[in-house]
Length: 246
Image 1 (tube, rainbow, N blue to C red):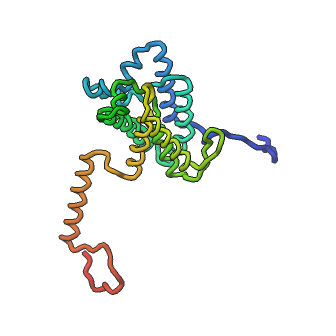
Image 2 (cartoon, rainbow, N blue to C red):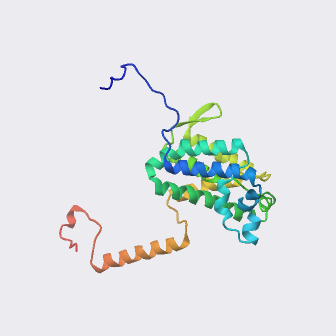
C-alpha cells in the first residue's frame, strides 16, 4: 500500500513545465552545433547567413542553417532559455506541427528580410551585406511576439522589473530597431526585427506566398459562382420568409 501524501506537502516548479520532445530536439540541435563550431570553425562561415553569398552565389541553405549557430555562451543560453520558456506554452496551444511551421517560417523569413534589407542603397543597410549573421534570435523574437499576442498581460521579467508581455515585446522591438541602424556585424538586430514582422504577418493571416494568395482568390471566386448559380443566400431578416433557399 502507498502512504497518503502529507496534508501540508507543497511543490515548487520553475518555468512553464516539462519540455516536449520537439523542443528537446531543437535545443539539442542548437547545442550540438554550438560545440561543433569550436571544433570546426569553418561551420560558422559555411552555414552562417552571409547576404552577399546568398545573393551572389545563391547559398540559400544559409537562410535556415544560420538559426542553429551562435556567437557565444550567453547568446545560446538566452535563446534556448527563451525557446523553452515561451515555446513550451505556445506548442501546447498550437500543437507541434503548427509550432514548428511558425518557428521555421519566422526564422527563415527573418533571414530573407535581412538579405533584402542589406541590398537597399543606404549606409546602415549596406553594412549588413558583408557580415556573417548567426543565431536563432529571429525565430525567438517571433515566439516573443506570439506570446505577447496570446498573453498580453502576463508579466515578463525584463532586467529586474516584471512588465506585461505586450510592453516587454514592444520594448525589445524598439531596441532591435534602434540597434539595427548601427549594426556592427555578428548577430544582426535587423534579423530580430524581421522575426517580429514575419511573426506578426503570419499570425494575422497575411499571405506569405504569392501562389497561395492566387489559389485563395480563385477558390473564393468559385464559391461565389456556385452560390449565384444555385440561388444560395447567406442569410436574411425575419420578413424574408418567402425567399427561396436552395
